[in-house]
Every structure is written in C-alpha cells, then in structure tokens.
Image (cartoon, rainbow, N blue to C red):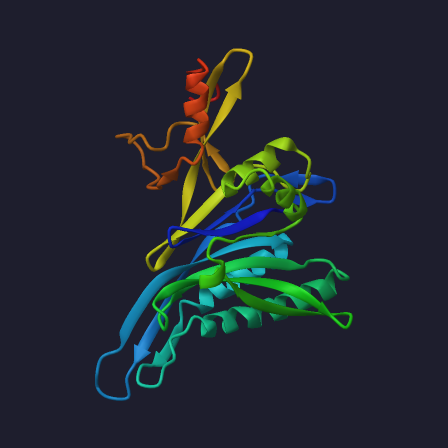
Length: 287
C-alpha cells in the first residue's frame, strides 16, 4: 500500500501520503499514515536541582503493512513519552531516539513477518528536533536485504548537502518518480498519482504534516472537485482520511469545533480555473 513523500522546504520537514490500505483486491481509504508522535524528556540532576521537562512532537509517515504500522506507532507513542536522562552526562542527540525506534522496528517487523510467512514489511519516515544540534533532522527507516536476511536500519536524509531533495517510499514510488520528471511539487505529484488511478494501492484523500520549530503537526487539506462540462468547481476538506462535508473552518455556536489548520496547496489550480471562466459552487454532498 501507499505512497509516502518526504521533503524539506523553507527549513521545514514535510510528510504527505495517500489514505489507502489494501487487503488483496479490496481496500479502504481512511487509513491514517501521517502522525505526530509526542515526546517527553525528563532532565534529571545528581544535585538537588528539580527535574526539568522537555516536550515536543516528532513526526512519522508509514508505508507498508497496517498491522505492523499500528504495532510500531502504539509502542513508540507510549515509550517516547517516558524518557529521562541525567542532564550533567546527557548527549541530547535525536540519534538516541532513533535507536529506541529502531529497536521496536526490528522486533515488530521480524515477529510479524515470521507470523505472516514473509509478509508484513514496513518502511517509514521519521523526523524530530535534535536538542544537540538545535535543528530538525529527518530519517528513513527501511528493511534492507543482506545475505538473504532482512535487517532493519535507518539513514539520515535532508542533510545540508541534499536539503532540496525529495524522497518516496511505498508501492507507488516508481510511478511517483515518473511523474517527478515533469512535476516537481510534492503534493501535486501525490494528487496526480491518486487521481490517475494507475497505481491501485494508492488512493483516497491526501494526508499532510510539517514541522514548525520543535513541533511536527498534521494539517487538514483543502482540495477541489472540478466539473469540466459545467465549468464549475467546489471545495473539499479532508482531515487525515476523512472528508468533512461542511466547511470545518467555520465556527458554529451549538457544537464542538475541530480546531485544525488547513493547508490549501492547490490555490494556483483554482486561480487558473478562474482565469478560464470557471465558477465556484457548493459541495452537493454538504448538509
């Protein structure tokens, strides 16, 4: 399943994916794949100085078996909120966090692939703020076949020498690379692949998240449905794999409001449609 994309823009690490999970020839399009992972680090002291607490979000974007992904995310989400270190002796590199994540990655992948007779592999992007280097760092975790045996490793991406690079993982990677030859905008690559239908394991709404200072958070996505024959279009609002039919940015007085920021990456598409004489209309499925 899946196409996950990672890139870096204006100093921010960005992740995006589709929302499809496939089981043989069947699928559903509400599988969450881009997720913030809260981290808590307690700084302890050998003196009487009170313990300090540092909190921020890492980010993860997963491609592969849903059971493996769920097991990994559930485990690291609990573990990474319970870390502590002696401040006087600590090395605050995010590499130590990656080593914890790799331990779960190795154990869970090996157990599940054994149970599923070789199936169940997972790969993912992981990013977070590094207290040692005072910057966000990004890593790609993947199974590597060595002498007929899979080893579960990670490598850092988007270092200073390749900060403008873009990375793909998942079953849609080869098709995405073909699109990348003519389309360099990551979210357009993902949108084009989803809407083309040429890769059956990639589909559903776009999911998107990015770093902001120490924190990785997901954003909703505004997309558009276009009717060429009527020369109209309407907005669609997605939160992870779900479409919110009413405009979620509008506050209502009689119910709870989902306090989510929305990215609108396809505004230039609408600008071009308006130039061609298209007009906006209401979502026919909205209440």
